[in-house]
Image (tube, rainbow, N blue to C red):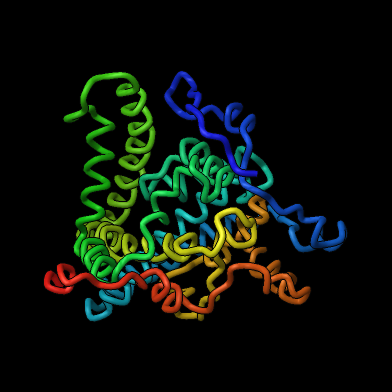
Length: 344
């Protein structure tokens, strides 16, 4: 069912009311038991209490190892930047799992790990993100979807995407996003008016934990004698490689999907090779169609569920593409105008 148009009801803190979200019509959904027996579904979607936290440890372990590699020899800096940037994206993905309550069965552990060990160092705030992200799932690719702005402009020209990637890799995207976030947090240049204080409060809730966790990272590196690594091996990957692959991941998930109203075709699964998984799509984030079909399933079960769906022939009805290069070709299929060609 398509959602109705209407004015969003907000809580006292300015955020969209979850009760209001639940009361409105939503995008069409898939019931797991329409595709699997109850026993099969319980087996395929089973959670455990250690896998989510272990993935968080895994992300930080790769970040630490990549830092050590470039501290040992700066010749490895380009590789380290890509590895660290990909795991920084991985931390946001694990915060995303926590937003669905899928990182740990215990809600308090789930929220603590998801916020302080995954989201906060990257400037994310779990509670605010959960509110926003569940709205996205409720109205996936519909008019009320807050993420529609990320997919609606596509397809674009190759020139347009190239300009965006250049802005990402030169830190311009990062600077714009973070400067806006900090300006909102501290009321710098914000026009007074309805909701201004609520926006500032929401921004502060993300910025203050980010400052605390980043000070902790800087302090640890300083104690170890490598204060400069915070800027070169933490901020630089975040400001460059992570920005670019976040954009590519967003394109892969919903850009130029074939049917905004079909729950098997309004999100895309991109079958990533091992190199893409290492540097672009960590922690099974590429199985995005399965995630939208079964949004409370932990990320580490999505590949297993994909294979089970393939065995049943269901993936033939889903939006599945092989590799990010193919998806980018689809997303940049708009013809170049003479003006764009001249600018290139």
